[in-house]
Every structure is written in C-alpha cells, then in structure tokens.
Image 1 (cartoon, helix red, strand yellow):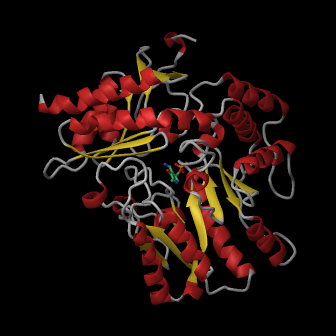
Image 2 (cartoon, protein in one colour; image 1 turned 60 degrees about the vertical axis):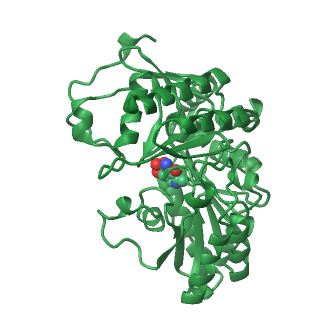
Image 3 (cartoon, rainbow, N blue to C red; image 1 turned 45 degrees about the vertical axis):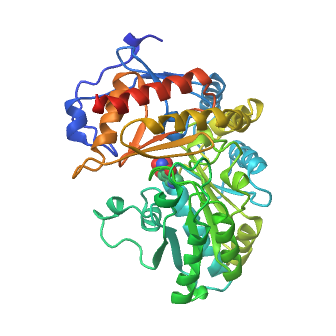
Length: 443
Ligand code: PMP
C-alpha cells in the first residue's frame, strides 16, 4: 500500500468529530492514514512515532498481520450472528481466552463494544447482583474524583471529571465520589507507586457512615487513572479499598480499560497491584483496537447469583446487538494469542526501568511540575499558563506532531502509553522530541 491509495475526503464538513475542537481541526486538519508497527503515517507519507498506542489500545503494535488475517477469515465465514438466545462458537472461544488471563475466579465474561459500554454494563451487573440476592436497597454507586469511565450515563455519572458532566444535566442519582489520589505536595516526582495516600481509601467509611452500607452497591475505580493524567495508586490504597468493600458487602469494580492486557507488565492491573476485584471492565487492548470490543469479567459467584437468582426467562436484561461480534471475537482471539506468544506483559515489564528513567529525565525541562510512571504509562505534568489551562500541553502536542511524534494531552498533562513492543530507540526518540517540544516555549 502506498500513500496514493489513501482516499482523500472531499469535504470535512459532515463528520462531527468526537472529543475534538471541530472548528479548530477543520481549519488545520491533522490526518493519519496508515499504521504499521510503532508508527502512523500521514496521507503525505510522513512517519509519526506512536507514543500513545493509538489511544492506550494498540498494545501489540499496528497492522499485525495475524489479527488482520483472523478478521478477514472470520468475515468470510460468518459476518454476524444474532445475540438473542443464540450463540456462535467464536464468542465462547474468545470469552474462554479472556478467562485464562483474568485473576483466578473472575472467569465469567460479558461482551460489549467499548469501554463506555463495559462501564455501564459493570454498574448494571452490580445492581442486578444485589437485587438477585434480595438486597434491593443497595442502589448507591461510588466512583472517584478524576475517574474516567467513558461517556455513557452510568460511567459518566460515576466518573469524576467536571467538564465531562456539566453539559449534561443532573446525571444518575445516588452517586457519590471518593477523593482522588493525586497528592502533589507529598508525592511529586514519585517513581512508580507513590508512598503517600493509602488512607484516602478510608473516605469510603465516611460514605458508609453517611448513607449506610445497606444502600451501597459498588465502588468503581481505575487501578491507574489514565485519562485524567496518569494517577498511580498510592502503595496500599487499593488493598485498603478492597478490605473496606469486603467489610461492608460492597462490590469492587476495577475499570481495566487502560490497565488491562499487559500495560502494567501483568495481564491486568489487578495482578500487578495484588488486589482482585469482583468485576472488571476491559476494552481497547482486547482486540488491539482492530475491531471495537469491550468486555466485563465477573467473579463466578456474581454470575451464579444473577443467573440462578432471577426468575426463568431472560435472567439479565442487558446486551448489545454486537455483543461478542464474530469479527471482534476473531480479533480478540488473535490478539490474545500474540499477548501470549510474544509475552507482551513480559516485554512491558522488561522495558519499565528504562521507561521510568526516560520519563524522569524530563524533570529538568522548564514548566515540568510532576512526572508519574507505572508499567508502560507515563504522565508529564506542566504548569498551566495563567488563565489558559491546557494551552501549554496542547502546544507541546502540536510541536511533537510536527516533529513526527504522537503524544496525548489532557489538561496540562502529557500522557504516554506506547505499544508494548516499544524499543529503547523509540523511547529515546519519544523523550528527546518531547524534551525539545517542552523547551521550545522557553527558547
Ligand atoms: N474507562 C476507561 C478507564 C478509559 O480509559 C476509557 C477510554 N479512554 C473508557 C472507559 C471508555 O472507553 P471507550 O472510549 O471505548 O468507550
């Protein structure tokens, strides 16, 4: 394939782009047309090093022929099968392959098409579980400030990002939030898990005291908050949250949409952090993002309770036309095969010390006020320009792109998550370019 075979749009008007400043983009479009390995290519053929694995998702690198062929093969065998009271073998196979790498006992898998759908599905499973056990008073859902769980009404309500919520009215009732775990005064420039802040989990006790444990269904957190700027959990924090949930009969949900599939050097964040949730969401890396797919894995007891605890008929009234879609299932199986044969978690683990040093080498660049890292995730926080939050990091994004490197920015934080096949030379180029882009302002 060469650049000439990439079709050019006649007009940019019709496509209302998600998560984008449409007016700005359409004035100065930046397009990606092709991807291979560690790189994207623009329609003009310019090579862009992918510092973000697409959007935290292409963990095995781009254009993997094994995944492409699996999708092509499945498309020719069976394009689609309805999901009501019918199954198809490849979805069962994909679920079993996922269950092979989830924490022990978290082995029942419900398919969705995205992280947002996974978040809403997980919340509905939690509510259905308590209902099936006869504890219908447990309807309260608890998230965390600076949590991101997608854009459905459930995930958005439990998520804790002001700007995500304020356009959309009152959202779900009976939702509370734990404090976020970002403590810059104590933990700035911490490497890996920060030392301070485990006690922030105790805020759950306050909510229990306020509302009564018998009203609380679930707590949902990301093991590492990604989209709000890489917030790594303080040592012991998640264990404490687990203990409190157990004490009060509250389900613990991990949103592993970013932290799953090797990103933290283990299959899931749960493994790296030594805490097993009752329910975990996933998406992104599940299919290497080649076909949209998400999933929710639950403890066997949660599944059994719902499946056996509801009257005959449809026991959990939830699902999507495309749950377990054959093409996505094929992509997931091929991806999980690469995950295993190429030991992607092991590669991430082996690269982590180099990655950590590279991230922290940016400490001396101007306006850098914090650096955070864990697994193959990095966050470089810049001070904001007075009255212009986000503008400084946005400039860094543009400069990097112009120099052939893709980074992601959120507020004034540069968030990095390269494909797990990244090599030292890629890390050097990524960090070198970022360093130049940050220094360009002061020059
Ligand atoms: N949860 C988390 C932790 C995420 O990072 C994201 C996406 N960045 C989502 C949910 C939503 O996923 P999607 O965009 O696939 O709906």
